[in-house]
Image (cartoon, rainbow, N blue to C red; front, side, top):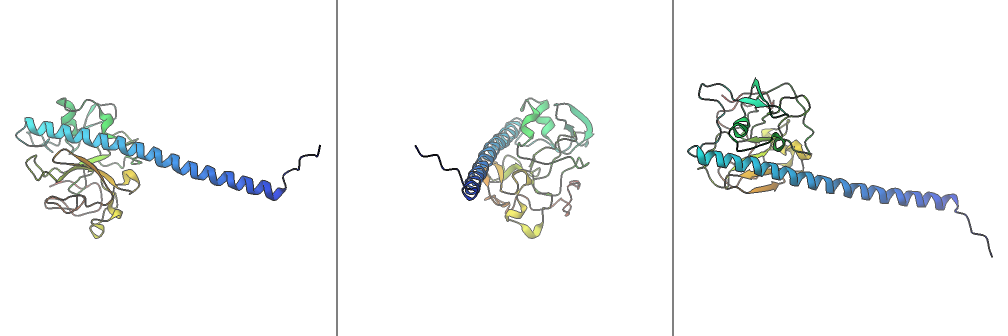
Amino acid sequence: MSARRAFTLIELLVLLVAIGLLCAVLFVHVLRAHEAARRASCMGNTRQIGLAMIQYAADHDDQFPPLVDAGGNMVPAVDNEGNVSTLPSRTAFAVLLKEGYLTTTKVFLCRSSRDRYHGEDFPADYRIARLPDLILPEKSCSYGWDPTKTHGADATCALLADKPSKDLSASNEGTARNNSDNHRKAGQNVFYNDGHTKWTTTSAPDSGDDPDIYLGGPGYETSNTDAKIIR
């Protein structure tokens, strides 16, 4: 019986390279599968918040939750543990929790988001505003909404979406460069006024009366920072 031939060094290197390539391909597919799952979860969050806002509007003369209370004060923020904070915020999501339209703050966090707290508690100056709803340092709210709309607006208007990029620029309107950072600028989940949710790959998913959901509009200061206050 002849002895088995041992691997030569070159054959061993070729084998190791092949295994490395297979592992790399497998790793990429696993990452894509994980991101697809996170994106689907994010879409579910967007839909839950959007439907809660529509239910709120049905009970409040077609008006979505106010940016300020009856006394003209900014509505309070909500922290990661569901507690209402005294630190003011111009988000209305706390109202949805307080009145029972939503039952958990978990829907405010996109699993793909790498966003971190930047010290501001105010939205930016865009139609879909950045709303740092959750004030603990680890996370911020992953979504923003259009405070200028009513439920009687065009059914195809974007109402809610992954919040916009921190480096949003008017020169990039309708392009992937203005996509949300939540999904590494691959796109964003958008909830429309008629109740449907859609994944879009540019920052101009509106087919209604706004050409770009992240475009600065009347009543907003024009700046690329995320600390500007709606006037």
